[in-house]
Length: 588
Ligand SMILES: Cc1cc2nc3c(=O)[nH]c(=O)nc-3n(C[C@H](O)[C@H](O)[C@H](O)COP(=O)(O)OP(=O)(O)OC[C@H]3O[C@@H](n4cnc5c(N)ncnc54)[C@H](O)[C@@H]3O)c2cc1C
Image 1 (tube, rainbow, N blue to C red):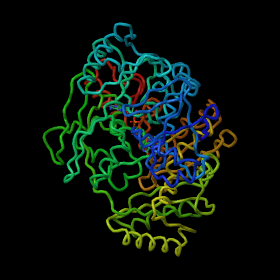
Image 2 (cartoon, rainbow, N blue to C red):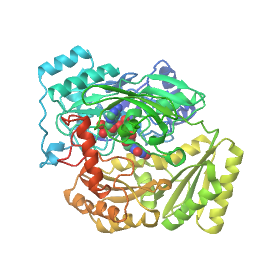
Image 3 (tube, protein in one colour):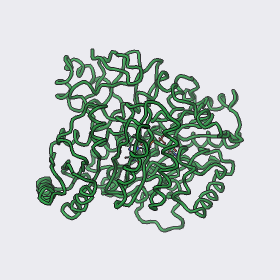
Image 4 (tube, rainbow, N blue to C red):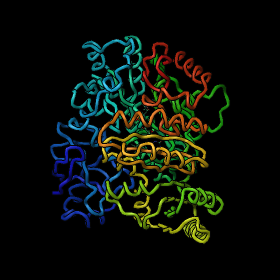
């Protein structure tokens, strides 16, 4: 038996006999008697819940929570595990997303959104009643959840910053079921919120008041894969990491990758137009999604599920749903173009003296690595400190003010490695970097990526996380961080910056032990005004959701917002589809 600690209540919990191991030897080293555990495991088959960069792929807690292929059934008193102190055992973000979602003790500490935002008014929607529940139960028997304990997780966002009060969660399996549910809600005037993996970071995936939650969790069927063209067709609820593992079996890769891969779903990814670490290489989902199927607010099914690369027959309707954050309809299936899987991946971590040096390293990486450059991420020293303090991760380099993580992937490992070494030498000779290390074996690559991919998880250990995701010109990119640090002096535990520098995308995060209105007042609207003055975007990749909708004008013209509202009204005249999200109050 291995002790594990709940991140929320700090209680030690027994963890038994239920691992699915990615790298057995690592676990054997880390956990005494793990051979027994591993044997016990092989009989359990379930969907991986952790990030692919984690060694433990799945687990079950005795008497605590149970995860199976069709989602998870929770039991009371489930806890959020912290295994990070077990040396050599690394857990991905999925651990938090998947396990903690059923924890009442943890979720119920989050203030209700209606309390935290007292000026917010509930829309003129109908109130759920017994007949509604009976109707849903007859439509999808056994998949109507009304247990308040179980609902907590679906009412609360991943960041634990907003919480709704929905009385029902529906888990359809088929498009026709989604259609029937939505049609009923439309006619009754019941508001709904579509939910995928619930890893969204802007409060878009959970109800604000008592909206009906429609989860795509059980819509996880892969319909087809054409290994020649690389076109994958699947239901919206397929978990990104599962899809990636599936297409890898056909020498392909998913065109997107993000830290929440173990829990987020392709429908959620498309609805948020998620960016992530591969955008630099494969571009945005507006390019890779070939088609989709969606259920409109009226319940009508729109089939745009083409697998064609070229199709200029009228308006490209799928683009409307990509990034609409569930406000125009529910995506039920997706057709997506998967690139060839690279044969070799190499990663370098470089230490730099200044942010300008990081930018120079980026420029050099483009000229030296060219077509094999697949990711360029940056972290400041405050981020590295956070990773060491909160997750006990170690950095292979000594302390530097800034770090650049450079990944290249291509078809010839030796050739790519040589290129990467040449690039590293160049940056060291010119002084752009002060030190660097190259990782070619998977364990070291995963360890280096862990330093970047687990930042969001590490921040949660501080307490409350004020999370910002902005696009800025590189010339002024880090100035915002310095200004914020000065402004928040004494009002935050830390101010950390990291992000997809290759895409001009800064993740700026502040933390306090608990939500502090004074800290919030120092951050907003200051940050949005700052970004707007630089003609940046107030949301680079996370979307607007509930939390950022009122700042849309900082990045979009009034005419553009009016046109969005016109589209919304045309598709959803009653405004039932994910209300209070994306469009500012009064325009939904
Ligand atoms: C650790 C961590 C790392 C992350 N890294 C990144 C990153 O690098 N890049 C990035 O862009 N994001 C990142 N995110 C944010 C988040 O993972 C993405 O926004 C993701 O695409 C959300 O997918 P989901 O299935 O969890 O959607 P949810 O959170 O369930 O929903 C997100 C939004 O989409 C809507 N929605 C969900 N499914 C559907 C559907 N089928 N039809 C219509 N609307 C739907 C919801 O209503 C909501 O508005 C990260 C999050 C975490 C926790």
